Image (cartoon, rainbow, N blue to C red; front, side, top):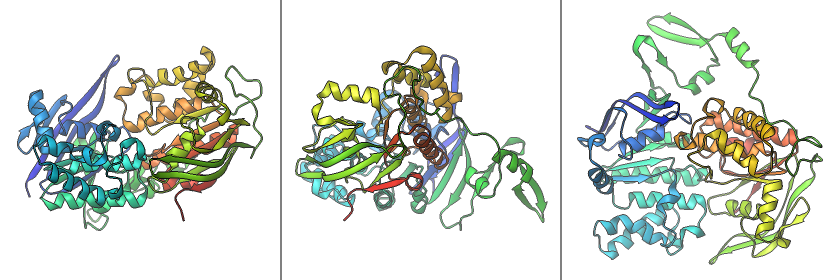
Length: 526
């Protein structure tokens, strides 16, 4: 096979007021014609930046990006646009941007074919075929607002694949899908890439993606650190840098118990790495990042600052029903959410998880039934009253972080506290504490627009935690996080619930988060 994508010595620097932040630092990678290549790596490692450079949305600071012989970085803007429309299928992690609300699903999937001049009958046929393959064949005339986030994500992937692109670029295509739906999507990507000799370059945090890949490439700190080919029996190669530096995947080091330092030995021409027991013991005893302090009676400004009795019912859903068109994802639901507990709301895409969270937060109103939050019946509140309840007693983290892109991470968190009535000294202290608790102290002054999707998600979590609300509602908070960050965030949410008495309600497909929760509320089960 010959390479379709060639990336050599690629550097990309995001400009900031303090100079610049390197996202890629000499990355070199080739993707063969007809290959499905999955790129894995922690949040902030440069995965999405790589895809945007290959797609021509940004130009490299240095190095080469060549696709099918085209020097993408050197193309003028009009030729890059033509390259994307005719050659690429691009499924962005911000999938909602590709879904015009006034169009039906069959129209959305057929847009690219229409621009290419395909007849209406062929556009419809292709749209129906793809939507049926992702389980949405019965929703052809629905609009995006009638779908769950996971269903919208599947529609955006179908739209990217409809015109049978030579190269599919997909950024976290299963971030908000349940495991079964995720497998279906990865199988679809693999099948469609092979049907016409297409090539797929996919960024993911989902370990299932490796099962459908011809090759898995690991990126860390803006460089390729390791790669593994399908059928290699679990073995892969690691990159040896100049000066003899080895870049070993973190999950391998963790599995071997290597923390901080490793012992190195040469045995019959084999280089062996083993855990240094003294360094591992010291690292295990090192203090973790501080979690937000417990709520105390009479603490500084901010509504809702009261002591909470353990297991007190803070949220009650009574006979809830919500209907969209002829679909009722929530129908006759009863549930109670208690202080100091973490509840994972689970279920397949479209089962009503996001709908339930929005009803609890007062962002939507039920067709029947009611929600009671801390003794307040939301049915008795108008829109302004529900907004005031959110300001004083709730924190909501949506599937889209809702941050101000030109403000720094610190400024976004501080702004949220200011809007809730906190004075400067207290808001500054809380901002510093919560950014540290989500591992972003080193990125506190960076504009949100320059952060990775996973880092932006953690800023949104910090903004919510800083307020120490009575009820914390989070919709897929680990969808864009790598495994270690997801585990750390789950532990943090449990600590917040225990220490402050907050009722934490998370809609999630993530088994790591479900495992750490106190309870599971399964929707859509029979």
